[in-house]
Length: 336
Ligand SMILES: [Zn+2]
Image (tube, rainbow, N blue to C red):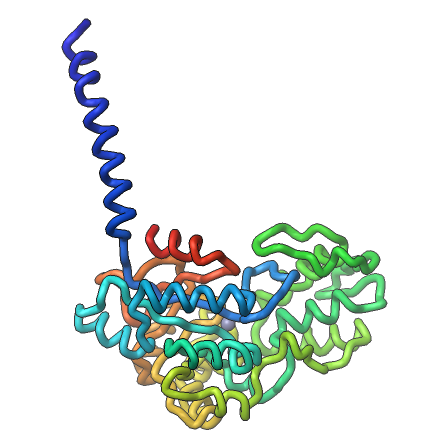
């Protein structure tokens, strides 16, 4: 037996023992890193390609777990401590993007009774418009239409028959039914349009698909009255640009309008000056960061899936998108 194999024999058990010790230590002293959590809808939903919905019963369990295991801070406090390099390792901030009605109706009372603060990022012009957000609106129109095909940008997209299975789309899965594929094709074409072209395309689809503009109660944005009623020490509002565009796609003056003017419009809508913002779709560039700072926000959030570290820039803060996860999975992600 050579020296190296003998050494291997001796080192192997030591390594194994160290690995086991580390696992035990991790259980005893779970890893904690500051995180900003991102939610969208608090709703029971079977059609959820982008994992935006968390059921109310699951959300209640998330709040229970967070209250017992993390220091949940209002986002402005979280950012101040981050800047001062005083952020506790177990700090968490809860955020909601888009201002769905369910956040005012379902999440706000739950947050209030658990005493946990949250920030809702609101695109004020879309709230005033009162229609479904475009990604939901085209789902509503495409999935329900009696039409057999639809043209977008000169391309004809077959819709196929409507089936019961159309409503079943698990998070992050590929489209399965013909209608789901048609919806996804329409969505992909609209996703890259400028705000004006996107609006025009939605109105054309509405006509071509024989749809109305009535928002579903399950998907509608909150009303101005609901936003004002939900606003409290527990629930604050931040800006999500004016019309929810992908900011890097805009020219400088449009970008400035969407970011800087969102401060006044948010304040007019919620009667509270927004201290924070989130980039729509998480899309941002160096100019957006500069404009967010110039607009007077304390910070701006992205959708980069990461923990907040000492290196995180206040105008490019990462967030962890939370799905309809068991508390055990939430714990695993936050301790990962
Ligand atoms: Zn959004």
